Amino acid sequence: MYTLEPNQDYRDQSLRDNAELSSTELQADAAKHYDDCYNDYLVAWCNRDNLALHYGYWDEAKPYDQHQALLNKNQVLYEKAGIQAGDKVLDAGCGIGGSTIWMAKQHGNQVTGITISAKQADYARQHAKRHGVADRVDFQVADFCATPFPDASFDVVWALESSCHALHKGEFLREAWRVLRPGGRIVVCDGFVLQRQFNPQQWQAVVTCLNGWAVPNLCARDEFKGLLEQQGFQAIVCHDITAQTQASVEHMYKVAKRLKPVQTISEWLGLRSKAQTANYLVGLAQHQLFTEKLTEYCIFTAQKA
Image (cartoon, rainbow, N blue to C red; front, top):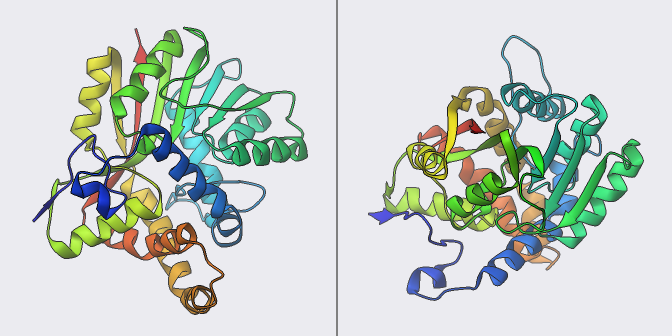
């Protein structure tokens, strides 16, 4: 059996043999992943409207397609966090600006997006200008565990599939608490493990997903709730949206299977980077994590007293 411990990095075999990377090296690895895979995401997953590097939200009562489901995820988080148009929002781990631009465009919010990738920040600025919201958004290169902002700078901290990239999730929550104003809210949407022990086949799928998405480890729901409580957050609510995410899981799996010949030939010709190949493999492995109920997908909301 293999054990996935909190606060450890499992992205590379060498790291499990007591070799450690510095936090700077871990961030550089994650930044390279997203830089290398920028075009892959735009071609195979999202588009230049939603700019979404996350799963979609599929409501069975409404006939969403893939791209609408990606946009709908933003609206679901916005509503569950009780965000108002006048709220100043920090998009912690903004990617190429999808959610930041959506909040500014759809609701008129002033939003600051931070990413550890300079290229992502540049892409996000270009997309914001194209969407006509450059005056309402600000993109900066910063670590969401150690931001440059003063205390009590924001009404909302938004983390959509980004907190998973923190080696120590508590460090992210501590910084979120610091930059939130009294009464401010945090909304975190991510995948969470349902168990810590895995057989060899399951472990291979877990590590493939961690490697492919540059994620060091995953938290369990109860562990994350405990970290929120430890930091002092109140009114903590966990919304399980695994069922509404499953269609995105299936879509990603089908896309990966359809692209297998392209991936195989491109890899043979040396046209795919290590990060791109690892990212492709996640499309297959993530399906196993969800179908075997090794992971769940949740939205946490909480408030700073």
